Image 1 (cartoon, rainbow, N blue to C red):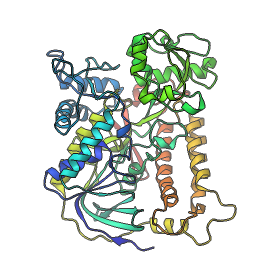
Image 2: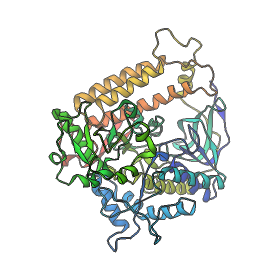
Image 3: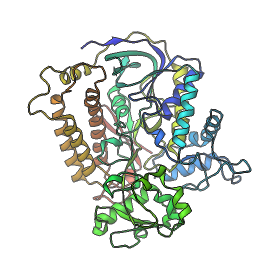
Image 4: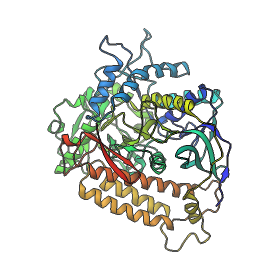
Length: 550
């Protein structure tokens, strides 16, 4: 298996969601030659375009107390003691500026007749901060970023799967890619590398993200020697539909309906949130709602499929029409104003990942990270409406830092285990008689994570999950592509992607086993309370695990 050289760039950005494109724009505005690598198509790859509604920023509309510092304080409160104050303050200070830039690039934020932003309220925010473009905010942001990146001459390498950050003397010096369009394994030199690959929640059988969000960046950064942190924390979206089967996994906007008269009910038709939280349910953050639903089901009072019901019959019809996401509910003949809907929490956002400073730097020189692949901002829970501003603020910071620190790209020697992995998957003996197929292996991984390392865990469930992940690992050498060659070999790409997903899954399960308490999005049935002893971060670098005070 040969590796082909590719033209070098001052900055290579891996990932083409909001964080990746914003990083590319910032580096290009600094005069750097930039290439964006994406395993899908530009503007259609990643989770950013699926952000339906909001972008939270502090605009000072509510007087002297409505400040960036207040926004940062809300983030810190939501993070259960583990959110990084420096990162929270940076987001509070820069989110409004990034929103104004987006508007200049074509995002038409909704405004009232007086020209002020139309603002929405979300739990955990002391002030209204959520600006939006109706129910297409993520798409509008992505179109604006794509247009701006194109105007700056940013190169794009699409349908290319990043496999490894290549190092020279311990410094990030390039990226190893499987270029499916050209049918080649490519070593692309870089003066600096920005990882913006998103999270890892596609490692679950039921989740709320695109299936390509498989933890690539977490696995790549770990292999490169970067420090990872908070890996045990994966936030759930508290209410996705689990019935009827055709609607399984669709977001149900309970948080937006609770303030208009909707009720959250157990399998007996009883309201139950008050058993698990002292706050009014209208002020409940995502972790609190998720915790209440799974604990009520664990107590034997859940809905038939292990969740809860939402009764929205008291909500005004006009309000209900405004939350029918793009007609999905109507197309599936779901009438939320007539019937109770069965819902459950499902993994939604990766809170842990690559440890960064306020400029997106990791502890590997020349390697930066931004967006959901990075960690530190949220701690143990994320406020609603912060994902998009996080991507923009830290994408811009990482892009500027990468541009400032970029070294002249040079040819690199490729030392990689991926040659053997690709050769094995393309063996002429494939498909092998009796060998597992890709769907079986990926399905086994996702089922293991869903059953034992999902919203509610225990030491026993996590140990069982790790044992099942070992079985998945044993399948990997026998997985074979039924298509010869590299060009447009999507099955080969999924086989290699499964290796990243397995690495990210194992990192998460191990960290979740070590943290023997419940905090924020991390819920242990055998340790149901927060433990002050665990007001600290787990740090993972290579095979070593350390603890650091929050």
